[in-house]
Image (cartoon, rainbow, N blue to C red; front, side):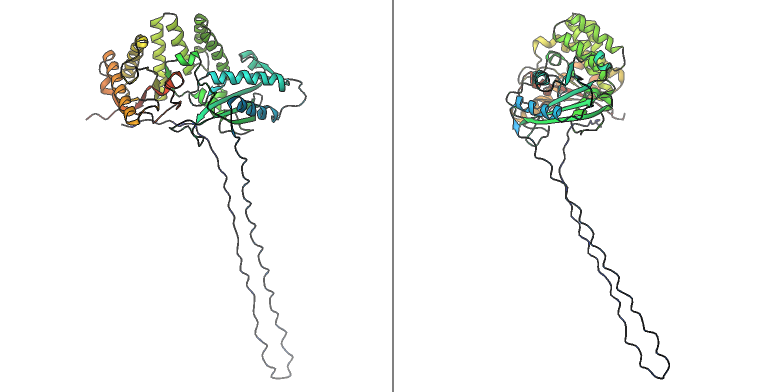
Length: 438
């Protein structure tokens, strides 16, 4: 069976230099002496020897590409944020004349998971204080639809755990990449960038309440567009279209998440419902929000319907990861989550059956522990989840295959075995081509 693959986020560049030398040979003409005189006839006209052609000028050497500047040193986290933000705001090419420039911040996110975290929140607070103290020309405004209507400057940023080479490939995370971007919403282009490298100590990647509670992770175009606008771009590049199209919805989602984090679930539910009815509402954060708020309000039937929307969204994206929490070293679920898991499994089995599709069910673990044990444990968990799905939706076992991925495909990669890398200890469902009937 064939599994649909998705692309990831990694960017990089390296200098190249090439020198070329041209060698040109010139030809020189030769003449014979004139014949002897036989009679008094006038001598023949003198023979003219053609001048040798001038030697061709040597081909100019191709200039070597300039050596790129050395990356900034790996600094303490707060120092790295200060370094990146100072470069971003200090070097921005801004319109002249206006005394103050309105600026909104679309909340910063983790570059690997797309979640807001304790670290990203602290970055925003630090940067807000810096704007007030050092860059008073920027007038910080709330991230709302009303503020966006005035086409202000837009500030975004990511913090991404990477290995020693700067990659998010499997393996230990050794430093964090702080990436900041300033976008002019009048032109839709990036007007400044800031980059720094931070030491891992002092970086708290614990997701905020909404992202901790969210049951599913699915590749989401709007979030990916945010990350790609910040990472791997240069000044003058346009904002990513997938992000640009949903900025207004992002402001509304931010209000809903703030209400959820504050425990105002009725208010959050109303906001999520409104977003779902409007353009730009087809996003994972909206579907997760509808599920969470209904569940918190005790509306289990509505929560089940909301989770079915998450499953449909995952099927459309060909991939969905669900955060099942198991007891350490076991295939058994944590007892306090069992009620929700039953709803999730029934909805996955039902929607997959209705879609007449087939799935690869892949278990994943964090990178702690021996990898052979992780692979075996992840396989057994995938088999257990499939069996539980089949109990609620008989026949689903015939439409699935199971595989254990161990820790080979992390999203967080932190190896902390807590809320910070819960998404790594997931069970993932990938849409596959169904085998031909025999």
